Amino acid sequence: MIDENSVVTIEYSVKDENGVIIDSSRDKEMLTFRMNEKRFFNKVLAELLGKNKKDYLEIVLNPEDAYGKYDKELIQKVPRKHFGDIVDIKKDMQLQITSGSGTAAVRILDYDNSNVVVDANHPLAGQKIRIEIYIADVK
Image (cartoon, rainbow, N blue to C red; front, top):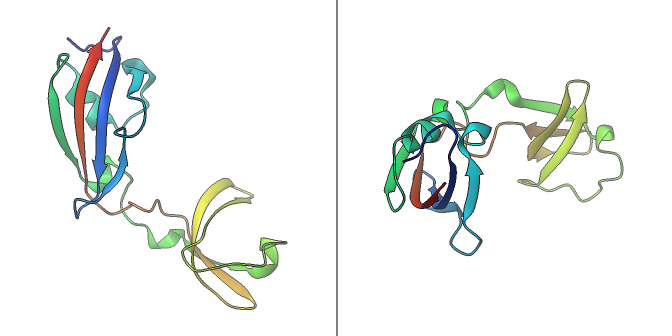
């Protein structure tokens, strides 16, 4: 049975609100982790507690339990000169940018010769996600 100190091996699938698979272990190695490392959403860890090898779970996470609510304040207009030598900027391009507050992954929403509009929300912010988990092993 899974407890806080268990090492758990799972097969998983993460789907967006429309049922589109956005991540899966199907074509990769199964994922092994220690429960007390807290590498997953708290609700997923809570659902795993008390489960056993060969159990199957389907967990629906609301935005606040997953990647957060969509925050319009994370959309910003940045002067193009701050993008240095990146000349081939395109809509929906994803970049890592560094500012005075740290490093963030952003998506390009729009651009012109003077400015670039970036969105620092996680691509799944504001969305429910469904996680399907098969527990392959518990130690």
